[in-house]
View 1 (cartoon, rainbow over the protein chains, first blue to last red):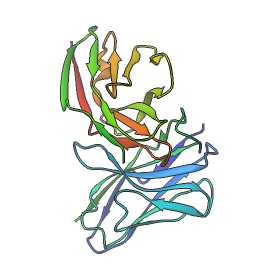
View 2: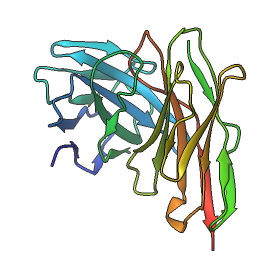
View 3: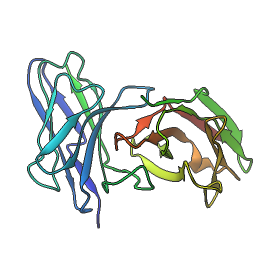
Length: 115
Length: 114
């Protein structure tokens, strides 16, 4: 089945440690995205990539880093510089194009808890 | 810059009744797309419906329809014949011409009562 996988579903880390969240898609989509969701709030864009080896900062990129070495993979690293990393992280992908009906497909998310 | 506003933090509806979830948006892009997603308690985001800014007719997908009023910059989601499984968070989102990523509203929690 085509889709997006994120692992693990739950992740626990100690403060000061970097942690990498994985995101893999087999939909052959060009564009991939990382969003952060805090309790009771909407999704905010961290980073996005429209093509391999290229990515752009979103609205809340500070303390995060990404890479896009393969079309199907877009890992997100939460660094120790991120002041409040505990959140629900969602990865998404879509065809790359205009504002048209290229809906984003989302993975199941990773719930990160940093103590 | 794009902005989505959802003014209803929570809504209740009786099973089998219709419900409207409000969404207003702001953008300077001449062309844009509007989306609605459903997020059950499991956390996954489920795409429901799409409306393009130049579409002449309101979008419909099964029990979901989008009441698009361009002049008022509103894109309300109408769910007909509510079911218990419709209980979830609902997010309105938009994509403009500049940035392909979605801008989301803060969401509305819908609870369907038997």
